[in-house]
Length: 440
Ligand code: KE4
Image 1: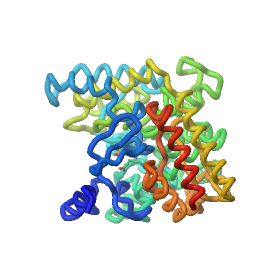
Image 2 (image 1 turned 60 degrees about the vertical axis):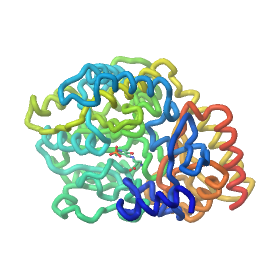
Image 3 (image 1 turned 180 degrees about the horizontal axis):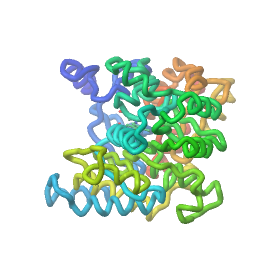
Image 4 (image 1 turned 135 degrees about the horizontal axis):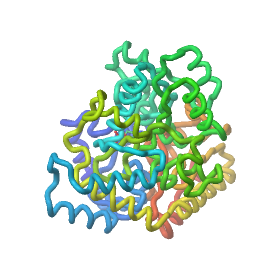
């Protein structure tokens, strides 16, 4: 038995499925997960000393690669003074100043300990602010595992065939209206069928939990228009896309596409959400989440207003120090064009290999996010993603892993690139993926 096998056997005795998060379980691709003992740059080192080029990047946070010296040093410096105080600390203020500077639509922000807490709290805030109960989400989008949002969810819920989790009372589920992504008519109809009842629309502006799926041109602008028309809030769940696709997340991309660079907030109002949820990168690899937006909405939160939200370790100094270092590195390096070049390189290698093999393949890609669907048709929502050949993806996944490249162990997850993938790692990965497709 390998060290990973021994560790997994022990884990299976005490941890459900042997994992602390279902997507890690390899259940949809087959086989058993390996255990990692260390990570650096683009590389994971397993418990059996195998080195793997990593395209999971701990599901998004590691945009600078694993164990970046600047982030490591920031954590060590903070650690000198303690791990958690339960009082306000200077790091929280600096984090709030960075987030509000990077993301113009965020006038005020509240830290949490996970993306799930961030979206759960944003939903509660939207309901409290509008005094309405219903919410709209989109099939396949994943916003963490709170009851109102674990309905037709993506990521692990979709991967393991439970997009509607057990344990959620029907009374909760009926307040969540689920619509197809990239379908303006469906949103219009839902608002007309629920006049005055919709508190908010929550959307992954670029989907990362059905695989990577991009919005049709004008779709996000339509969500902004229709929510404003009906007095509902628009929430961008940028837990995954925030600071990954642009320093201002998808809303930054939209502003640039509209011709506004470094414009004041009012100029690109047409796509600004009322609230934004964040996570992953802003913790530099430590537990974190955040939600923020219009000050008049955020001021409804306790202790100022009637919407309660809290967290023992919210804004804890270690996660804040790590996240501040990660955001400052993004500010200094502005790596987004470089990351897009890496993503295009990988996309082109995959498409060329599939063409040579005569295999239908879609590879949606933007910046450091991409995924591969074995299907002849463009993937633009949950149904077209599910039409892909997941069994063939599983074969591809294992062919890559056998050659030292680790992809997300599910056809319904985005892949992630980091600045550490530049050079040898991306070149080797292109070779491996080309060989893997050739072997299918
Ligand atoms: P966490 O509670 O896992 O920190 O964040 C939930 C969440 C919210 N919103 C979006 C858009 C997300 O992608 C996530 C979490 N992403 C998954 C990866 N698909 C986390 C991996 C896991 O569940 O282990």
